[in-house]
Amino acid sequence: MGFDEPEIEALDGLLIDASRLDSTVTGGVAFEAEIRLLRWLRISAIQLSVGGASLEEPWRPVPGSSNELQYRIDNVAHFRLGTGLGFQVPAGPVIPYATARVALGIHFAAVEVRHERLGRIGREYATDVVCDFGTEVGIAIPISDQLEIALGWRAFWTGAPSHGVVLSLNVG
Image 1 (tube, rainbow, N blue to C red):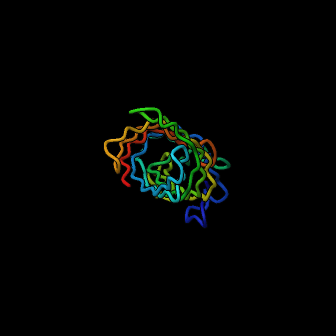
Image 2 (cartoon, helix red, strand yellow):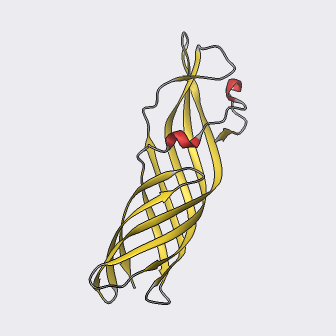
Image 3 (cartoon, rainbow, N blue to C red):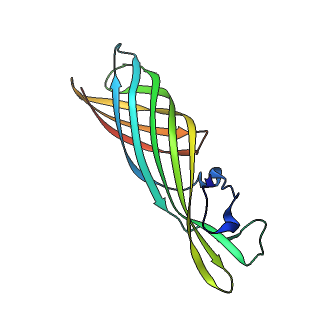
């Protein structure tokens, strides 16, 4: 994650390693449209998700400057547009499933900057556009012919790594 023309020149060229945000808990919402052509096939025609979090990250020295100049990530947000392909096993009242996912992600981080003696200097914004690859596994429970509840675990392993519980209500 990098800065595009930061006002605080000491941050120019600084890259933030997105993998350090892997353990960050983010909240969000997703919309997904699926196609079920066969009983065992799951096709995610489109998936759109947005989310974010406020962090309490420790202050770190800005590389290449005096140790008095420090930064920390304050807030993060993401926007993902993706698709998926997988299978399910319709075996009674509970349907286990697994899908592979690919998404184009735009990730944002608000970065606070301070000087040890002078105090807060300002805030800059880092962005990154990445291709995220991941998986989802879970179970679906049909409520009626046109309605099911699903509980799963979704993880993206590349790009901006993330993972979490997915609870969905599937109609149609």
